[in-house]
Image (cartoon, one colour):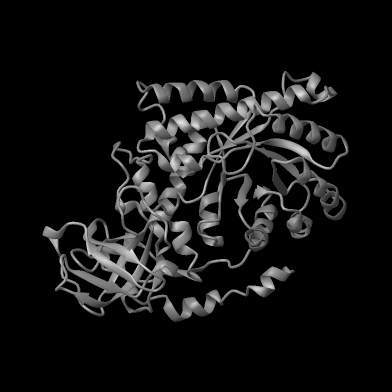
Length: 462
């Protein structure tokens, strides 16, 4: 049964979109448009799952970047027995219910973590999601005792208590508590009371390393990941000492919590953990992992990694198997825009595109001063693998000014020409579109790399 929000934010028909666009070239569709390369998305998702399996980590993908069932399936993978996801809005959880019910029908356990500290106004909708998915399907973040007041209502209406993750601040300072604060001690004490009442089950601890976007190497990203893991280890220790001894505790040295850490830069850095064994950051992280895994479960979480963007390239945290930084050819999302005027008399020359902040976003990137980088697709290449000399230098709501980053390599643009732009932040750029036009670069060798092979509809609303 659709929720009220789903009714208020109806989605276009996927079947209609597919019948209209599949088989067309992206050069023939209306612009601006969001174009995804399925081959790149699949590769990133496969690599992330393989990394977690190799290291013995659980993985909980975040769906907020893409907001599609299709990419969620790729993030989870076919072989995963426990399907754990994170959402930033309740509408994302509501839109995933049918997929998660399919997972349950295959004998898999499912759990949705609502990824912001629990708002009282959203409890009723989470109850509806939990009622459809069953016991053990809902987890919530807590970083203030008042948020616990809603748990009794959830338990009464859903018929089961949610799992609780305490949100810990390990350096980002957006949400969560410092483990050495009085506020954290008070929160743990309150959780103990609510657990005794049966209104919630403390499952683990959660940290988001948003500050890892500021790194410029995989070693720096590993260092942040180690700080996160150590911080959650300390949080678990404090909580363990504060809980009353039970019969179960008596059979174990400590309860096994889930320590959930990550962000795309820090999580990407562990892909080749151990290959740089001489690096101090790698050695320290590996020691911490071994220590924590002897007691608790480690869970990685990340969101933008299937798609990547200019901000992610700037962190230099992700590497290829050859230990070379990930390049533009690993960015799955481009924004297709049309050139609508050129200004050759300006110094240096500029051009105007009919795409602005509502289609590209307005988030900065530390590696350059623009708002998007124009690929070589349609200029010097047909495959969109490297940057052209053009970038989005200025931006307003529906206008983008293309300027030259390398004046000596000026490439001419013509009115009516389509260009593909790598955005700074894929999460924000994608939000302006109702669906993704999907291409597959594996078809490049047979001249079909620009052919639309699918259309993936994005969820709308909150």
